[in-house]
Each structure stands twice: as C-alpha cells, then as structure tokens.
Image (cartoon, rainbow, N blue to C red):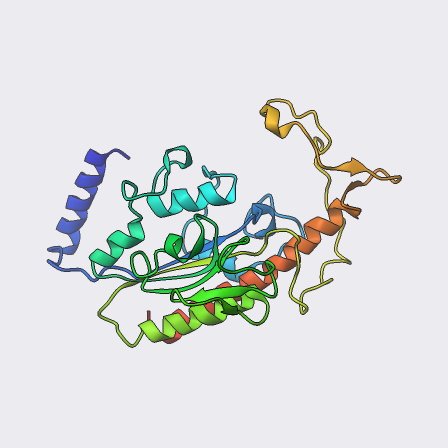
Length: 289
C-alpha cells in the first residue's frame, strides 16, 4: 500500500464512521523484547519444535499479527540501537544527533518505563534515566555498573540508583515489576504510557526456572538440520563454520551436550516468558487498559 492509497483509505473510513475526533487518546504501548529467542520455540509458528508450547504468546498472534519474515540485527548491541533510534544498525551511533524515540514520546506526554537487560553504552549515563525513561529497572549487562547472570544473581539499577539485588529468577522478576507498573499506571488513566520489557532470557546458558526444568526431556527427539555441519550453500562466509561436532552416535554436540538437550532446555526457558506474557495481559485486562 502506497501513501496515496493509505490517505484514500483513511478518508473513506472517516466517511463511513463519521467525523474523526479532534483529540484521540494515544494508545498505551507494551513492548516485549527477548534475547536470542528462536521462532522455533513459539508454538504458533509452523516451523516450531513439535514440543514448543506458548499458549499466551499464541493468543497475541491469534488476536493480532504474526510476521513470517523480518529484518533484525543479529547481535545484541546493534539490535537495541536500532530499536531505540528507529535507524538501521549500521547507521546508529551514540550521541545527540541520534535521539531515542522514547525521549520524543515523553515530550508528547507519555510516561515511559524500561525493565531488563541493557547492552548499549556503559553505566547510568548511558541508560538516560530521566531523559528517555521516567521509570527504569536496568540490568547493565557486563562489567559495568551492575552484574550477575542472565537468570540469577542480577544486580539492577532502579531509577538510576546504586546497584541492588534483583532477587530471584530474572524472567519472573521482570514480570513482577511490569505487573506493578501496569497497575500503577491504571491510577493515572489520562496519561498514556510506553513500557519496554527487555527479557535477558533466553540467552545462553539456557537455564529454565526450576518449575520447568526437565519438563521436555521425554518429548520426541529434536530434528537435526541437514546442514548443521556445513557447508551451507547460499549462506555468507561467516555462516559456514559450525560449532557442532558429531559424537560417537552421530548426534550433534556442543560443549558436551547434544542438540536435543540444548534445544529443549532453551524451549523450557521460554516457558517462563510465556507465563509472563499471560500475567501482563491479565493485569491489563483487570485494570481495563
């Protein structure tokens, strides 16, 4: 659809449904961003593992849009840079010439929040709390202002403060804080909000919550891609090397564990994210947002 078609469509709809209101309440925006999650772990996709089970994420797909193709930044930092600036990754740079669109949202009356993994710039100044975010609970990944593992022992900076213990399984704790955010914003219905949930899971080493650990071990064995060892015809040079090696039984292994082990453990780690999506949607429904 080109811009002319879009204008015609909007004009036609205005004619059908009546005059467009002079002032429309901007929508609240809940943006869920996960690290290293494969589409194969999301059961609404045709290419998902046959043991993938994400009922809450699937409900979003049923009610909305499920993309079959997308352009992404394949690494952590450029992905975040692209998300925050709206630019292609190669065109991103830190500095005032590349404003973040969350800062622009604030100038238009939005209340902005962010929780989770930070991996673009070092320390509190890079987080831009008070400029890009009104509310933030940030795990500064790496040896910067905070540390800890992807799943446990994280230290987070709340609203730009000193690092403190997140306490608990990170995926669950990010969800806890987000539910609190949603309920708190319901008390101020006249102000729209944007909230970015940056789940650090399911980054390696894949570590499911205790309640999900081992839940898929008896499921059918994971199918092995035909080109797992390479060569990979039609793929660029940097994708020709394989980390996988065959064991004595011919099963692909990496760091002493089979492909079946890693694929299932990653999928088990996704279960907590799916539960988190369900809890967040429930909070939105209960608060009428």
